[in-house]
Length: 252
Image (cartoon, rainbow, N blue to C red; front, side, top):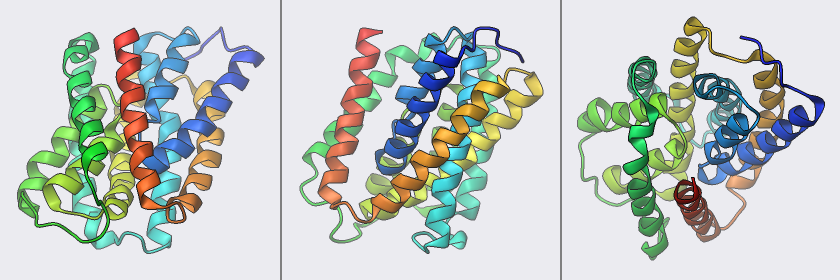
């Protein structure tokens, strides 16, 4: 799909936004808060913006996932079936968005984001020990992960934070472990959604590829910073991104 309005100024704007989003998304999630509005501000139709956002964010989450796996921050056997569940859920959600109005999500999303923000804000210590799991591994894989994946296929912003919260609250994972696993699941959802959008012909390739370069840079930087920044700072970054997303939705 072509996009006639892609000037040099818009290209530089999208490139810069992608760097910042890739960095923040790797650390705390919420990069879609920046990239999706930026694409829509550039004049893209909504479905084209969603599709192109998946193309560029796949580079960021893919880079972060590779860094986590190579650094043994997460093991392949931990995530391979979770990634499959996330992939299936996202594919279903992306098919659904072709036929429904994404505006219906605007009433639900601020509530969920607020819950995530307050959860991390008032969690006193978040990385000392693994907590007891509240949901079985099978239920998490079969129901929780596909539901979050479906949300990413339908809309997307905040998916990484949702996966992190689910890992913390439902599976008792440490914060950094939950964050690392979330990157791999978010990569699976992005790829699934991108495949569906490619068949539908909605992707703006030039804009997406420009942003992919920015996402790679940002995600590479974020992956190197993730395990060097004190975990409480990361927690507050998650809180900041959640409430920034909430303010964005209220203003919109």
